[in-house]
Amino acid sequence: MPRIAVIIPARYASSRFPGKPLFPLRGADGVAKSLVQRSWEAASAIGVPASVWVATDDQRIADEVAKFGGKVVMTSPDCRNGTERCAEAADKLGDVDIVVNLQGDAPLTPVDAIAPLIDLLEQKPGCAMATPAVRCSPSTYRHLVEDQRNGRVGGTTVVFDEDQRALYFSKRVIPHLPADHDLAELPVFLHLGLYAYRTGALRDYAARPPGTLELLEGLEQLRFLETGQDIAVHPLPPLGWDPIELNNPTDVAAVEAALAERGMR
Image (tube, rainbow, N blue to C red; front, side, top):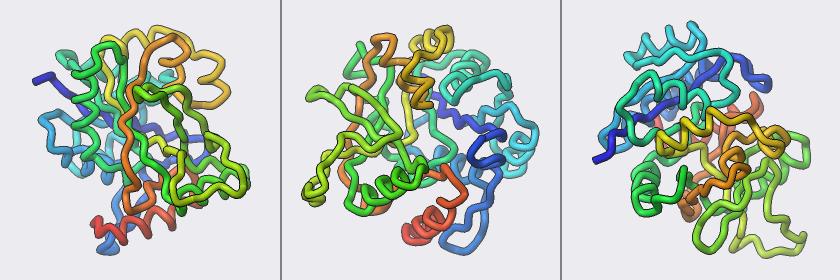
């Protein structure tokens, strides 16, 4: 078995939602837990032997993790994104073959997708990274389009080839659909905030500067594509719930409603 570490990158200074990892979200039982605690609990239930860590540069987040018994790796405030933070944390942990990056703003991510990502890396030795994407339901698609229409980022979409290698990720809804397209079978895949990397590829990533597309889109995974590395995509059918990310304060009500609907305490 490969040695696996699940790392949750968490920073306080989000431009769109400062202090987001500490924001309390109510679950199905009405009890509020911080976003970072919900992320930790999800990572701890993946069903794959792994150590779980929160990587942060902020003592307030470290203190919150200590309250619920989690483990913290302190990282530099100079990390430009979560992937760089995972790379630094992995170097500090050592003896890790695969790093799973569970984004701390996606409490509705289906963590049972982690094991297939690890399998993908074993099946496709040429891939630097594996990540899941879920086919959009009509309601998720409408949510993304409405956010785009109002100048908000509601999520990231991805297109991939017939071998399920990523072609591009965007904060816009891709591919473009004509107005009369039948929503019953959408060719739009929502990228989920979950990555599995080989540690060597992660180390190489951190040694390279961001490229033009990464800077324009604000999407860290584009650095892999811009440097010619393959990303394996694990497509999933519609989940039965909207895997909304907590990107903006306006997302709170929708995320809490989804937690209640799924019975997540």
